[in-house]
Length: 183
Image 1 (cartoon, helix red, strand yellow):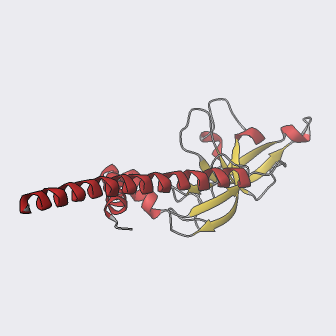
Image 2 (cartoon, rainbow, N blue to C red):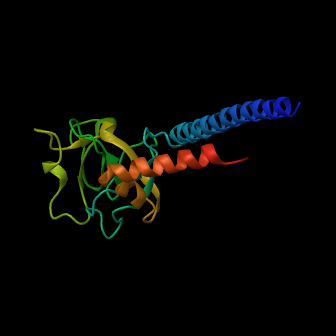
């Protein structure tokens, strides 16, 4: 009789453990899904394929420092002098955050307006950063315009990019916290 009770208790605990593990995995899935939904909502609201970026260099100091997070928006309008834009260059993986310093629209339509950028902390314009033979940026190169920033909150991202082991440790720790939580 005592043996049967112990066996029944052990089977019940095993079933409870399986349910608990399934519940934790479902919770982890909900967290990941929620994060993706928030990201996609930001993309739709901002009109930008990358609504949030981290400043990776000191080229925009003193306006923005390495590790600042920029919130971007991409309205359907022409970019003008003085705006801080995030743009991508063909052949480069990392987008660049710089200020528009000059416009060029002689003999071309307003929608095809060209512009030149420069980092606030750089001595010369960005023509050396552009693709070979490219002297001006076009509107299609712009991923977004800076509308807000959060100072230094992106330092964690920079740390994880510089040290991949930190990235895996943070992801592992977060996953462990989700899986081992009791609620």
